[in-house]
Image (tube, rainbow, N blue to C red; front, side, top):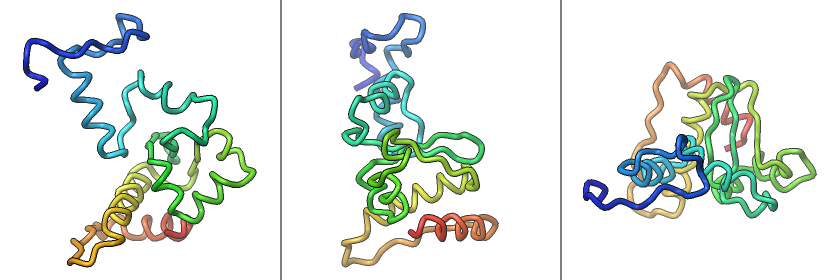
Length: 151
């Protein structure tokens, strides 16, 4: 439906120069928020992360060693013991909704987030579960990250 001449307007609270092209902003939103592993568009980042009540925010921001940012659904994050303790305890992470991983690379953190979505999707499945592919080159780094996160 995005190819039609009539498109939804860009959010009005943005300056005209930072608004995305009218034919792509909606499709970009749908594509990026479906996977939860990409940084949402800048105009949605403020609405997601700058809420007065951080606990009501539907996302948690994960920051890797290289300062790459990945947004993860709070519901999925709370399924991981280490993340749950950080988000529900008396820690800075619970107040900010941001968790920093100075020892985990961006690629490893992204793969962990993909695994968390995989685990959430197939945890109650009785049918055959598809394999979660891991390249041998990244196995050791993922093992260290999974051990730290206890997932």
